[in-house]
Image (cartoon, rainbow, N blue to C red):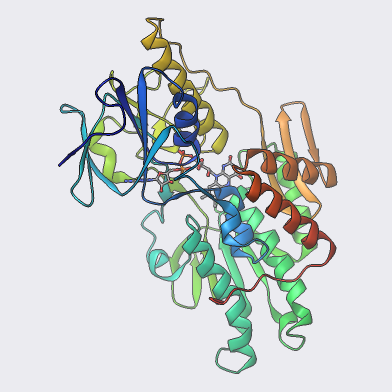
Length: 411
Ligand SMILES: Cc1cc2nc3c(=O)[nH]c(=O)nc-3n(C[C@H](O)[C@H](O)[C@H](O)COP(=O)(O)OP(=O)(O)OC[C@H]3O[C@@H](n4cnc5c(N)ncnc54)[C@H](O)[C@@H]3O)c2cc1C
């Protein structure tokens, strides 16, 4: 079945796959084009704000706050909920899991990435990943329910231990937040809670490897002070139902095991073109795979000035999404296409309440409370939707003054 949308007869049809950071940025900018009607497709009816997933996993934010509903977000954009399973670049058509076929004149491919276990035995079965709302919900349930099960004598005390693998921003943020949760929850489980621990494992020589070594050092010191046990040069070789085994033979026993070590683009789409080691599709300097297909965000492999693929982060996806919309409009006005240039605005990671590291330029780095406030402000600014912004702001103020873990009926 061929689906025709909107003013297809008079306008060209731009189809965006993925309502994430890159796809939404593109659809938003392209929606007012006189020449195009825009269709946005996603398997979920919301944009997930992944940078705050760890706060859902550690019971400080409700999941609705980090999911921005896209169905009615932009009046001019037609939203289709569905899983795209195939793209026929020759026929300019794509297929949805329900068998429907949609034709396009321009396709913006913004499908993001997924977690990878690097094939390490047992990780897929015995460790949580944190890519989706349901992953965060599962982690939260494990963190909270374990206390009740241990108190009831159904599980041994060692199950209160949490181990997190991956010393990048996600692992660091999660480790700090889990530790704070463990400390706050002591009020509820006085006898058992002091036994709980968090271990953060990093295979490389330092935490936050993409940051300046001074930021890594500050992060290590701060996490250690908070009571997180940090181990660097600690490669995991196996996960079991009760532990993680390290390369040096040691076994770390933990009831909750979280894998925050690495993402790749979905391998399913490798057939579309040449890909890099992370399955990301290599694109030309205009972010094109061919004249009609543009790739943005985590799914695109685009080199930085040193020839390494740009990082899989939201600002890259947003800038690329906007760039593609601009190029499509330029082409309509018979203007030459522009080369994509990434404007690196820096990086940041929060470690705990009032503790963060921010790097804006090679010479502008700061830490502590100011960095934490900067982190809060920028995350609020990046969030879509005034309602989500207000609700998260209120939650943060509340958490800062009186902290109680958020419970839901599913916990
Ligand atoms: C836990 C976590 C924390 C992060 N923290 C940060 C951070 O602090 N700062 C930062 O800059 N970046 C962070 N990132 C990375 C950032 O979220 C990504 O770089 C960004 O989301 C990439 O944008 P995107 O548009 O390429 O993909 P996404 O935002 O992931 O969007 C892809 C969309 O495509 C949809 N989709 C995929 N396949 C299909 C299909 N076949 N059919 C239909 N729909 C499909 C998905 O449902 C999704 O909505 C984090 C990521 C994670 C997982």
